[in-house]
Image (cartoon, rainbow, N blue to C red):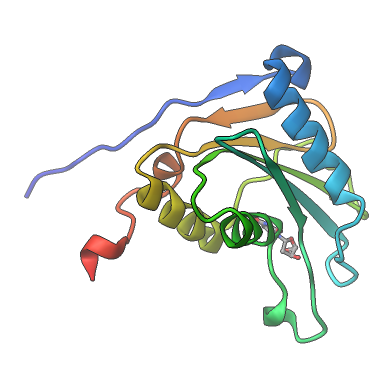
Length: 160
Ligand code: THU
């Protein structure tokens, strides 16, 4: 038996002001997208903005449904749209923000397991890392260099 330790480093900023201009813009757009989220059941609004390698930005937000599992997270709405509309472009960065109608939402939102799995599909396909920026309504921002960091021992096409 051997024990294996996997760890990763990420960067935390006190405010988007500390980020480079293009990342600041991306977080701003993801925050803007929380406003038009369709989340009447959870009251939890998530916005996402995806930056492609040619500078195109694709936005999305969570879309809920009375039949709960039929809804979709903001990250997947945005990334599926990016892949559908720009299948040959690489995804450079995704910014994700959240706003709760019910409580304080300064804490950066972290993508759910299904979104991590979805994002890693594109990271593997394009063979370059997808940077993830996590934010709340305001304040602290977390920057992670690769989706793979968020999903150790991930399942991919090579496992099939
Ligand atoms: N949600 C997202 O959009 N992204 C995540 O990564 C976590 C959760 C949405 C799904 C649902 O509409 C609401 O937040 C509450 O779970």
